[in-house]
Image (cartoon, rainbow, N blue to C red; front, top):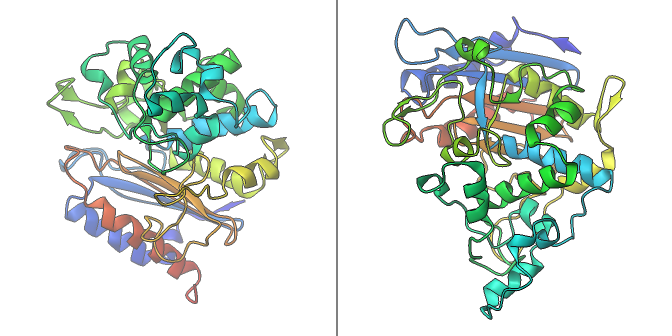
Length: 373
């Protein structure tokens, strides 16, 4: 693989101008853009860690809170590995793995409560479980056990399989399923089975204090923790859970994510290591339609218009966003991946200007690589 750093400034001049304008207009203080196409790779950086003029400049190896990229890089990938090893069965009920999700002694007759017995691991991955999108567990919980206890009792909003609704709650439960089946913590399993084999040396949950100066800060939290959040997970539920959760908590660099994306494009292989088979990647990245809502894949999002991936990603593409301002999109037909890492929640999560920037960046990248699209 050839890593072309210097030419990136000219190859992606339009994308770079979009990023620089975004920094000037305070959509985010800084960003790393990584692009892989066939056997080439480029990285460009803009801005600083914070808006102060003396703040450190963003580097190609700046570490970001990846937020919900955790769902695909860690949790979904762990599920793929375990399904392929036949340790996890997609169509088994959630209650098979987490009995408290539907206690056998419960006498409730409500239809939605009864439907809990039908929710499967596949439903969790496809975001069709019927569980709500989000719950503020952190307002009451003070440790992981409390969050799980509440997540296991959250009422369904829909019958399973009827509606696609992106759910943090579902992935909190999925992370717990992976821990129980693997008999390891999620961070240990992912470290041993994903990050170490792929040589993702600066990707982990709960990054060590020694990395702190290289980590872009997220929010100046005036509501809950009452401090600048840097080097600890931004998501409050994940923080209460000790920084390791199925929905959030992962930190990493654009270079590490590039290795992950290249593995996915190469059918689960990185060098001599075969992390998973092409068949399992194909299974997990196909759309899972529901009667209501745009279909997602298993864990992954799909480029359904309007998409953060812009106008040109192929139908077979898959990707994901992170709340802190991160994203990954992979297009196997074009042999392309695009990674955008920002800390758009600094100093406040109220800023959502990135919504318009993401598709513009992806369009500019593809226009630079293939003017005829």
